[in-house]
Amino acid sequence: MKTNEQVKLLLKLHELESDGNGTDKSKAFRRIERNLDPSILRQYQKLKQRKGTGVAVLKDHVCSGCKMVYPESHEMLRYKNFVHSCEYCGRLLVVTEKSA
Ligand SMILES: [Zn+2]
Image 1 (cartoon, rainbow, N blue to C red):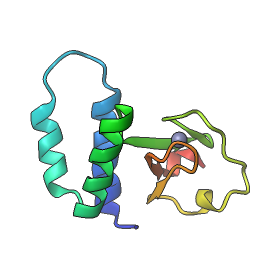
Image 2 (cartoon, rainbow, N blue to C red):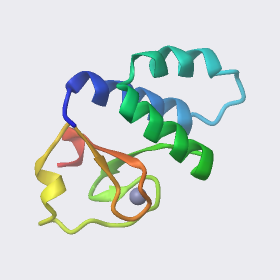
Image 3 (spheres, helix red, strand yellow):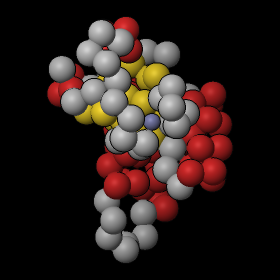
Image 4 (tube, helix red, strand yellow):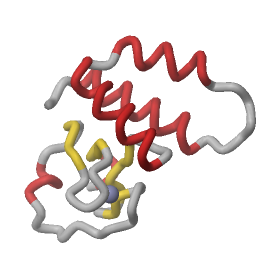
């Protein structure tokens, strides 16, 4: 899956998930979830239920969800701004430009 819009939404979700302060973010979550592709949303909700967070980003070749390191040669790294799944933890994984 590849639309930039979905990637942006997932990055926002990731931000919300990793922002540890106690304010109620359910409204912000709902606003994003409404715009997610239904199949991505289904996956996200399942993951969130099971693991607490549904989205991870790949930064410096490391999955932010499970901390597994991907080899530099991994083909996933060639597809920036794509929605992948982590091979190790299964979370939706976004490879951003920054991780290059
Ligand atoms: Zn992972």
